[in-house]
Image (tube, rainbow, N blue to C red; front, side, top):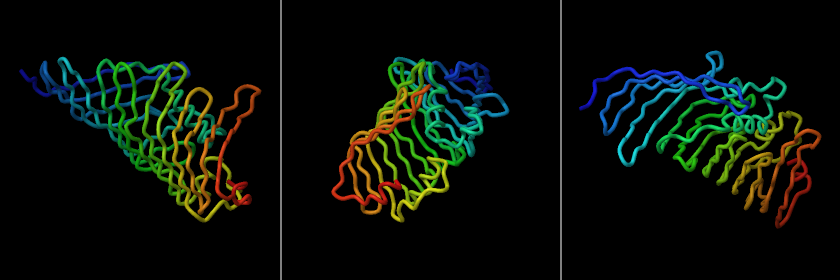
Length: 268
């Protein structure tokens, strides 16, 4: 028979990619029986109190032969810069921040049952700037993680959309999927990505980029790339490798275009 509403609270620990044990806490009111349960007024906190990520929401759990947890969490503000704890002189480097954030959750355990997690966050601070209207849906089971969709608005009036397969390993998070970027102000986007305000004028037109993205280990690669910037189009492949030790960062590009403006291409 269904139980009366009651409070559920527990505290456990998670391990970040750098090996540091991070506390997390979840509290909720739960109603249910042996068939299904409803979790209401969920409050989830990850990380120490002074720099924790906090979300609220609700969930439905189905038991039996086909168990599943469907959870929706939301927040008005999350500061990932504080969570991942990058040094001040490295916080405004988005590529490094993205990679550190991915590595942060390396080694996460597979869920004990299939999970569908929906996220909605109004503002996310990352690499010294704010990503707006972040929304996504992650589906996970004992075999795989999939990012059904992730949308957010980045600097430069840039809309970003991602979908694909996630692979969470002890070495970090790998991603293989599709990405689409549309920027109304490519100069502002480039200034954020490079942490430079002295960039030459790239273009007054919009930037549109789409391709198959592979992120893993020390490399970010975009295959099947199609890009359009101020009536200049390009196709091909671009890869970026992070530096390690004495090895410097490296960019590899194989692009074709019907025509090219070297002044604008050089600036880009």
